[in-house]
Image (cartoon, rainbow, N blue to C red; front, side, top):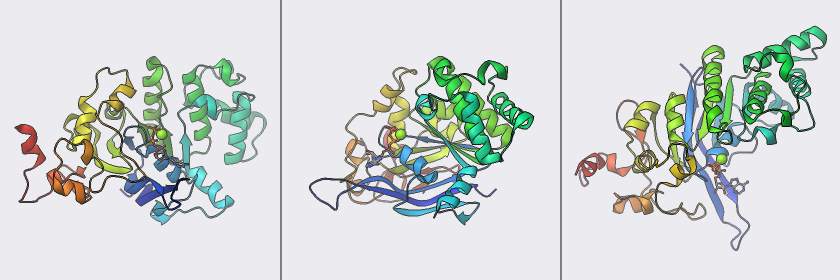
Length: 334
Ligand code: ATP
Ligand code: MG
């Protein structure tokens, strides 16, 4: 089926204030992405790889440097406040820190009433109570009376994230952009939030972008997984095969270097070596300085995302059909 939300050749370069006025941070370069109804795509990568930038571009919280965002195949570029309001109704975002995204001086009732009125019209009385009740039930904050008059500080992190999700749902969105929605929560309640999001995927057929450091949670939760490195997608495919049989050397490092399954940051750090400068990224493949298999072509030419079987893609010269080099597969088997 056709994608709900699509990015083509997405690019974001941030200006840097420095010695040279023309320097930019290459935060996101040439990223293609498709979100489908009732499907979850995970965006995985270490800190600074451009994940949040992609989410903010897709939410149209800032302009793109290049490329296009399409909603149901139509250019979705927001040009004014009215356009933004209409867009936000269909594409909602939830953030890492549910405490930061909820106003501490407002009760759950106030926060949800406000968003219900923005997105569903000026409901009042029993109609409004029903709407609030439906939202809180949807995120499993029941009995509703126990939660609706609470302030954020009276709720646990997981409950706050559920309120943030309820607020997003008040718009009845087609797309949910979830930027590390569980990384600040206690390990014990993370699964509950992922299961809630999965329930929204299945029952409301929402298209979800799930951003995470943690490739194991991507495997659990996402239908497809995209792996980013230094602003580019290096690998994508169905989550099971990307995590079980990673093709790109960076994904292989990410999957293998998981000393403690609970320590997500250690996992992300696991790929040895320094993250590259995004102001002057390495020529060719951006992973080449850290790659055990790098050859000359990797240092000069950007590898395109190439099919590596089963609908999977990897941006690695090791898989290119070039007679002058062994495949990475054969190198790894030695
Ligand atoms: P994390 O896992 O730490 O959240 P991330 O993958 O979400 O990382 P981004 O926040 O998208 O990474 O950042 C990508 C790059 O863009 C980083 O080098 C970051 O410093 C840079 N960047 C992000 N926002 C800005 C900005 N507003 N101005 C300048 N540079 C920025
Ligand atoms: Mg981020």
